[in-house]
Length: 629
Image (cartoon, rainbow, N blue to C red; front, side, top):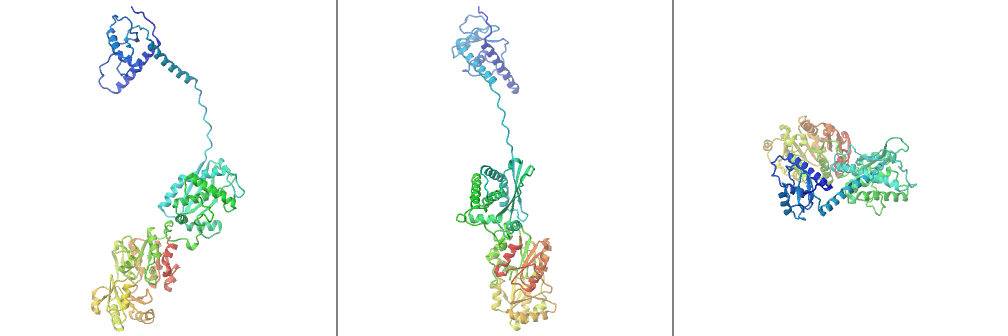
């Protein structure tokens, strides 16, 4: 008969292990309400728990309630215990030491020597973990946090600066990495001793909770005014800075100062240096920041080298391009450029100016066209630049619409996306034909038929060329070199020859007539005669010296402009006008800003707000750059 022994440590360990397996298995089952699998032999579960070499099996709890004990396979094989057959079958299947497992109600046999070794190793590991956890010293207290200082770069765009996409992107990027430049600048001050060449040195940063630097991005016009106020120099520059630091001021925020950068000058310098606008603005920011902190490259050569090294160090540390703004003349591509007041706005710089006007009404002959009846490249670029900034250019001329299209097409300003086309609005034939939205005619006025008959009779009798303007057509009685010049030089449609006066008058409605003669003949003969002959039935005007125009009474380009503005719903306060002739007087008076070119008539110059350069000096382009933005 087998003798009973007290349960060993291994028995307790195995027992608890099996119980945990049960409880775990119960949770899984409760979460997965599938049919329970058929229970497998209990001995196989004990083998899985006792031997790490065997596969682990997840089985439901056994149907018996007896304690689980391990016994030696070398006991009495003739035991009559109910589970002897189970034990013998498992014993025959066990691949390791032919170890047998038995489930007994109240006794156990001693373990074989391999079982004791495995149990001892496992117990030692558990004991070592517990002792190690008990003896582990508490973690040291965390070191006290250093005082944190908030660095803030506040960026403001001047009101005169339009919402340029590149400038807005640069401002957003500087918000992110500008404070890092401030930190590097403060680190440089703390590690390098102050020299006597510095204007001052900011050394009390640590006592503040927040350090704030203000950055203003503007155009040349704004920085020129600031430069005049701060330094008494009436010209634009690239960067200005002023310090607001007051030592011993007991407030939590340090208002470090203000840096002003002209992105217009920066764009010009970046193009000349061969890098991007962002690179140039970063260089100017670092330069202005160091000036705010007391560095002064103008004090001495030593101070210049010190500030140059500090600029280079900050730029290189941040991975920004450039070596700084301070360079020797031999190393620099350009010097510190000073833009005079007259050179404030140039071609390709209108992107940095907000338009003052929504519309610019421009005359053609004597204004956009030079003395050769051509539009120069400079004038064309000014018109394109203004249009690209959202300003609508409207042609207001004595010419026909085909003539305006012909002249502007030579510089790429006609057609879709140009200044004039058959679908654009405009004022033509001295305001007698007005086209509104989508190029539709909204106004037309014709000349009195009796005046037309008298004029052609005079032309036939005195052999003075006379042209009838009929919307998009030109009609005349006979050929003449001056008539051909009207087409070849002034871009008008080629005149159709109709030798009969009555035949000509019945061909089309006539809006105006033009006599062609010398400037002396017009002034001494034609104008005095027709001013008296029309007797209130028509008016007499001049756009160029060698042409006399006869138009319906009280005709003016200004009335046509006013009619178009009413049609578009635009106030005259939003309008700038540029002209030269006496036919432009009413238009110049109507506009919020009227510019008469220096080559214009005295009547036009007397009513204009501004007198610009001549048409041969690109007066219209200069007026756009100077006054429209």
